[in-house]
Length: 329
Image: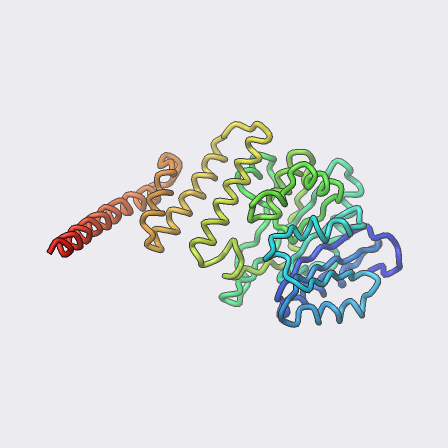
């Protein structure tokens, strides 16, 4: 890796908070990159209460030319401050940006070199991504499946996100244009990456390479994999809102795969609350499911729910009558 004091070609952005058990591996993935160009590492610690900041300082002392930390004294996320727009992007010097959060890590030392080589040779492309392994924190094992698959056009991306954030490298100009146009910091979206891909994918070309370059950690604490039904609900509804925002923004009529994707998200919400025995919520989302777009197994599941919901309603009525009668006495 080139350590000379030159303007970096790539700015690596890393957000972290209380990830002391992971951040060392994340930083090792950055500093092991073998490149013929200079890089910078912009790492934002959001006032961690564990040893995260101490570990970052170790690497800052060892790699002072490339590691540029931002240490917060008060947690900014809890104040609903847009960290990227406020603290990170104003400091970016690179022509390209790579992203990786503080609990994930890169495994391919040539990741950045391969991606930059492509972008330098193809000015009509603005984002390149790869596959990633998935590490399940609960089981302590790698999943058999990887995440990240071939980009098949904008409509496919609008239907299902195929781009793992920790694998991307993109043109800084494209990201800044997105931030200026969409102003995501003013939205209440719970996904920070997918909205950017949807904007970039509409205006620019996207490249996929099938290499596995990283490891994505899945934990119960993350918003997308939370065991809390309300947190899962908020995340899924946010994804639906993002899809609808871009469909309307770019005047795209609903198409079959898109309708199936939205329907699948509503089915997830229905299933989530059915299993948690929140029958009123389950009924709400069951009414948004187009049964013509689900499998026969899923249709049977909805039918079984309505039988149980009817029993639930009858029990509520009987309980109410008994309470009323006891009050009359």
